[in-house]
Amino acid sequence: MTLQNPNKPKARPAEVTAVLRRIVAENGYDHRWSYAVVIVCSLLVSGATAFSAWVMAPMVNEIFYERRGDAIYWICAGFMGAFLVRGFAGYGQAIALATIGNNLVARYQKRIFEHLMKLGVDFFNDTRSGRLAAQMDENVGGIRDLLSLTLISITRDAVTLIGLVALMVYQDPVLSLSSLLIGPPLIWAVIYITRRVRKINRESVLINSRLSGSVQEATQGIAIVKAFTMEDELARRIGIMADTAEQRSNKIARVSERLSPISDMLAGLAVTAVIAYSGYRALVLGQPPGAVFSFITALILAYDPARRLARMQVTMERALVNARMIYELLDLEPKQSDAPDAVEARVATGAVRFDNVTFGYSADMPVLRDLSFTAAAGKVTAIVGASGAGKSTMVALLQRFYDVDKGSIEVDGQDISKVTKRSLRQSIAYVSQAPYLFEGSIRDNIRYGRLSATDAEIEQAARQAAADEFIRQQPQGYDTPVGEGGSTLSGGQRQRVSIARAIVRQAPILLLDEATSALDNEAEARVQEALTHVMEGRTTIVIAHRLSTVVNADRIIVLEEGRLVEDGTHATLMADPHSIYARFHRIQGKKGLGLVDDVKASQTSAQTPAPRGRAKKTVRRSA
Image (tube, rainbow, N blue to C red; front, side, top):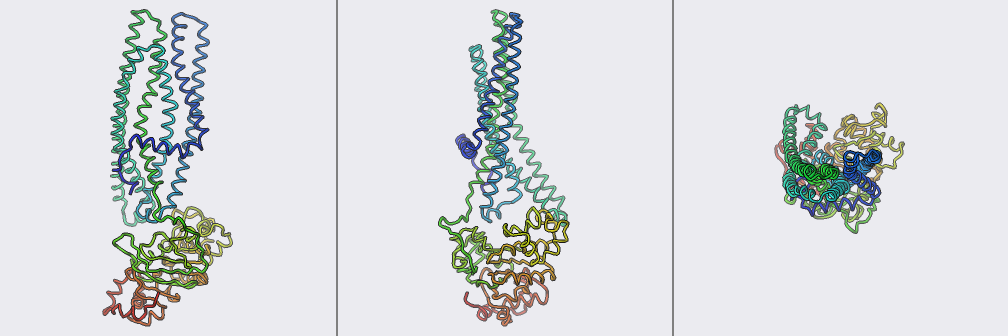
């Protein structure tokens, strides 16, 4: 996956410019006035700094050399004014940059989430959610840092350095030329260190995101961790990742911090040479010391912006890695984009037709093979079969979580690949076998089914889903917050809330993917009774784990290895004692097993398996 490829070619100068251009193009206009404030404040800081160095010459000459008392007032006033301007300008610059940076972080967080919601289910199947969240959290600051570093470096440090160098040249061109000889070796050191840092920055980001993601996953699955006594093993694995992250961070620190002693040594050589030469001129040649003091002050003050500019390239490498990884995510195109000429789905009756559908999650392993059937409008169609037969895949294809490899799926005669995914899914109410609740109250989670639903409709849906009673027993009733993923509710309670969410949607198509698998017998009976009324007039597709839940279906389809092998009603399928459906039914009746125990159980329990060709011939109908 692109986001996790540490061997991706490293950034070249042209790439740095391209990323900066993109950031500025996307955000510059909205923050133009804030940027103007930053630039003005930076210029004021630079001007005040240069003035502080310049005023050293008249201070030394007028006050200490010529002993003029009247000069004290205006020189002191000048110093005080310079520091006031620098202080307030620095404050304004910091506030403006913080405001811009915070807005950029919030903007990209919203933008990334909106983009993630457009990506297909396949992306999230291939990406660890905890690692993705941690990586986003670590990388999103790269956009802010890259822009802030560039802006500060250009408007503050570069301008300050230019002003101080100009002052140095004005005061003493010969000394200026000699002191600037430290530039070439400093530039060489920056280039060398930048190349070294560039090689390890991206890997460091990935290691840290893996560490944060693993910690998040462990805390989310803490019940399983403790149930299987995995604490020590997970602590060992996370400890290894933490040690690796520490080693990588230490290596980055060792490499990047090499610039400090190099720049200090070169600056020390320059200042020492200037002091020695200027001292010789003052003592031997008798020149006034003011210009020399001003020059040395400018040289010392120029050291900090020069050092920051040198370190900027090293620091920018990490911000650039983060920014590039954010854009790699934002540039991912959904594999299932709506067709250019896609129209809004118009679903009235909700008739569903699979026409020779073939699909596989990988090209060489089809899950469904030439599957054809019709779920009649307003009727209940049940899908049964062993684990891995393709039942849940059918539901995923109908909602266009994936696109078929061959064939087509139609709803009310409309090819779902030619309508917008949003309009299609708005016509479907879905209850999965793994109910999931989101942050918020129970009422909020039911209302996600239809945001315009009233409180009365939400409570009516909860009653139909046999959830009203336990909801009212909660501390705050319908307004009780649910824990992470609904952890404060039992599995059966979460399932009933998710069923209420599907009921309140009032969609013409209802998909129940083992919707009662988490319920006890009593709750299942109550929900089944409620669902019987809800399913009236709706096209309902039921994937069943317990065959007792599908006996009243208008049509039962039996899948085996992705193919339709039997279909009919409960009575017609049971009429042939050798049919696969009948064998499943006998197994569940005798042993209380579910279909999750699949065909292997039926094969081991049946002493003389009947030829499947006979079963197909007896009960198979045209799709």
